Length: 273
Ligand code: A2P
Image (cartoon, rainbow, N blue to C red):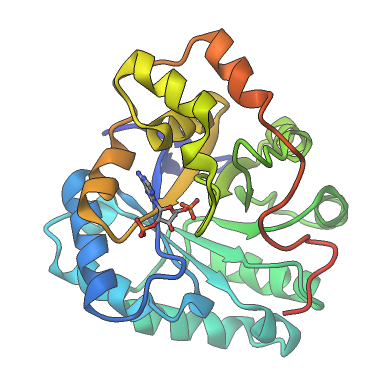
């Protein structure tokens, strides 16, 4: 198979994923996911709160890719955590996706009640309804608490991580405990000017690559799985072409030095949604 790595339960996860945050339910997202699958992406990352699981499901149903070759992720939303609706919310996501299992189910944010949600997810995992369970936007304090009281170490923590907010301490914490790290908004997110940064453009010029490709390759080389998002075919294709070059240690260090420590999104210890 193409580029994959084993999770802590031996399930293989693709090293690059396709994200659909802010992609609208309907033909735009169906088309984007179809393009992504045709391009070679096998990991598709959605969430109940994105409101586009049905479109992801349509694209999967229309695709020639065998289900077992796909790696589909969705996430449990905060309101469902707070209302202790984990089992029902999971079932609803499956139905919208038109699938009978997902490869990875994540707690979207450490909302109040997440400990209880995790117990239910352990059960879904034990029942074979999901091939791996994990978390998203968990900081070290949440992970400390979870690891202290679980039989199942989360397979993944999906976090904000980009050159401007590398989140390296958290990445290292996860890797030291066998938790794979996925990066959301690896390209800086909507409206970011990261990709216009001279340092990235200059590095890209040396390899004949765009700044986006440089950033995604940097993630790959620091063992982080980037989930890039685009609704444009040329960018979807471009963002997958990162396996045919390797950044030098000097270029990696230049990108590491871009870290400002400033988040683009919410702080896991201070969010109100
Ligand atoms: P669009 O969907 O209009 O292409 P992130 O993955 O960090 O969340 O950021 C993705 C943002 O960057 C999206 O707004 C996306 O917009 C845009 N984008 C994705 N890929 C590229 C690319 N290769 N070059 C420039 N912009 C990109």
